[in-house]
Length: 184
View 1 (tube, one colour):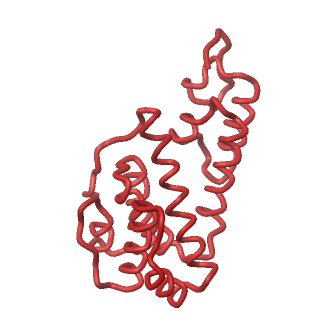
View 2 (view 1 turned 90 degrees about the vertical axis):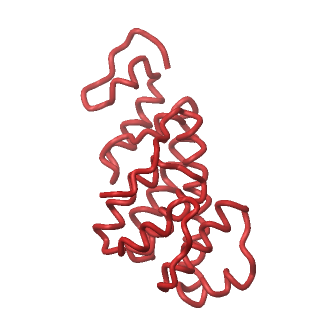
């Protein structure tokens, strides 16, 4: 993304020199429920159709989820902790707290933290760590997730673990990651 053109008002300066297609996708993202173009999407704008498709999946998971807000945020935090992505963990920890997630549960999603006994958080954390960290789940854990969250809910949890693992790759490759900041 190099060139002499200036970004339109509302686009971040890092889009200076962006192509028309990059600007279109950035404007699409900014005009959606996110209200801006977060760093992970800046890191993938060199492939605008890919950025558009990836952000669409994320928008469904974040803004149209069947999971309650607290459970969705626990899954995101657990995935961020599993893949050691401070950017995503720091971004979502305040959202989780605002959704009523207990501080002990938030802390249990940090890398190397021990899980919690609190359900449904314990199942969420174990499943996301397993899927994000190992790319699979054992049948008993997935069965427990289906029993607790239903088939659609368990499917969303697996999708969250895969999606946020993908985002973490872009965040780290783009140099946007940051240290974990566990204290509010």
